[in-house]
Amino acid sequence: MAKISGKTENDVELDRQALNQGLCQWASATLRDLPWRSTRDPWPVLVSEVMLQQTQVSRVTPKYIEFLERWPSPEALTQSSVSELLKLWQGLGYPRRARNLYDAAHQIVQAHDGKVPSALEDLLLLPGVGPYTARAVLVFAFELPVGVLDTNVGRLLARWTGRPLGPKEAQRIADELVDPDRPWLWNQGLFDLAALRCAKRNPECNRCPVKEWCSWGGVGDDPAVGSAAVSTAQTRFEGSDRQARGRMLKALTGGPVPTAQAATIMELQDDPVRASRLVGDLQNESLVTVQDEALLLGDLL
Image (tube, rainbow, N blue to C red; front, side, top):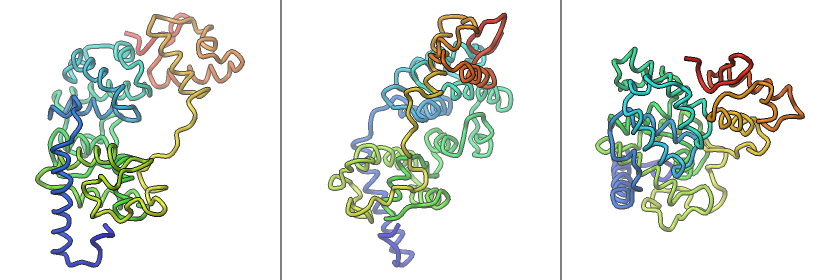
């Protein structure tokens, strides 16, 4: 961090320890009570991290609880159909994540005896699991001392250092700063600090428990703008392909739909070419099956 540059190696380590103490002490007292934080079981942790990708905590919480009541293990999920999972997934968005999670469960059962792997390289081979999700499982299930870099943490680290960061540098800083004895608490604390104090807009710098180590402090241009892992504005949902696909998948939860009605259901009557393309995309992603001139949800059993 810029605040501790130019110091001796010993001074830098003392500053890091002081920052860790300040963050972990604050986190111990204020950490949000979220259902996935009460477990170290790798399967619920993986499920929560997949659900939380681009979806708000408030929408994930009830779905997470319902999911684990039905599928408490990877093997349990493999005994169900994709269509059952997609029906539960309604309201979370980005249904490709559900398909990936379903495929990951099968891979976990077949290649890892039904146990979520604890090695980074094995986690990265699971469908839909990227560097962030893999590291989150390592920390929140196995409590390994690695940094978890999401959009909020990327923003916070850029502000701490006082400049935009590249992807590799941001991950390196996250790994270097993590408390080796309390990696779970450290990373969860970092998440909550970014959400509750170091928000994208109107950060509460005066209430930050580690403001002493921040190089920005809310003064001048925000160094997080354009930094690695920091989110940019999402494309408009209204009228998007995501909205049209969502309409189709929601309709299919009620049963088969004639292919001739696809454009109407997606409200693309004036653009049949686009409607046909979206149906094809859903088929290619194994979210929709065509049988006897009708669309069905998920795979054909």
